[in-house]
Length: 435
Image 1 (cartoon, helix red, strand yellow):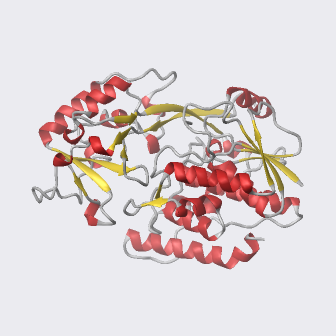
Image 2 (image 1 turned 90 degrees about the horizontal axis):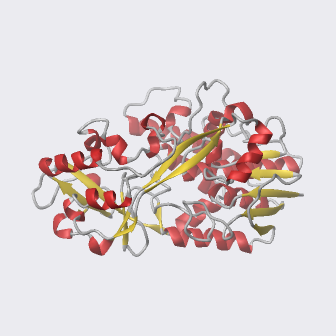
Image 3 (image 1 turned 45 degrees about the vertical axis):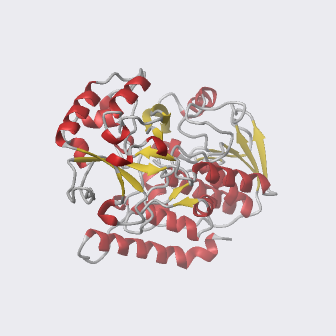
């Protein structure tokens, strides 16, 4: 029994691992190092764009629940993330390079996985999992259009925030701390007065953007909206979003500033920081000019400017079932962001489910019923729901999970009970799932 997995991102790596752990021979096809997408900078598998790409860790949020489900079920991605974790308050942040290198090492050393380098332009015979990512190469995308039809794919744009060196941040105008003093004070907080913010907002909303063909504000996916697009929606919009000052008291004044730009550690050494919420497609010189108006960043050294990437996803409810299999040809499955799950953790979860179910099918076993009450199941059911009229990418959230059958006071308490219910279901089925 053999399965070809196309793409060694988080979804493909997780899928390959789950298949291999269940005795299935895997050919993992990865076009790096021969060819890279604009988002890739190394030859390692499971490359992340920033240290906090795996997001919140608490069970009061849905992505925290999804991570715990995967952790309990033997996820490669979660195991490697936990081993390369860096402090980031209530989030699961990792040393990006350490994480990717560890995933690569585990994959390459597994006896049931053979890594095949080079670009895939046509689907192999036999069992195939397409996990080529949101920047699928033009040749493979054309093959998929030939298989599914010209209108199978849509496009949206994903944005990455700039990185600055820690030593270039003016700490006389910033301080370490987490919101409401939660966590271990790993964020650098860069305050702005009302006057400073007003000048910054004016410059940001009128700055020159890089050329992005086909880009329109109305088509930006809300979860990765460029900061300048958000700013154009209202003068104080940023103050209710990434520059929200709530819970951040400047120790020098004892008061909340008018606005606060947060920097998040991007590597284990703490030498690189990410501008939280500053995904952007401004021209590079404009980024330096405008972001230098943040007082603590007046002399910041930019190690990477923000960039925009084209992302591709299927109109999945038309084509995929709850196990991410192609309805018309079940030997072909898809995993990752091209299915319409949004986010690295969600991509890993789709790869996990595809790997588990493909292995079970090849071994003559019944599928695992991940119900909608679980985060893993809710994602698969969302992606395959034919009742969705205008399908758009979705992060995991409690809105796609059925409510409790009783009233619970307080959102955090309610979400905690939803997580407890899900983990009880996972616990009861864990032994069967791990077969």
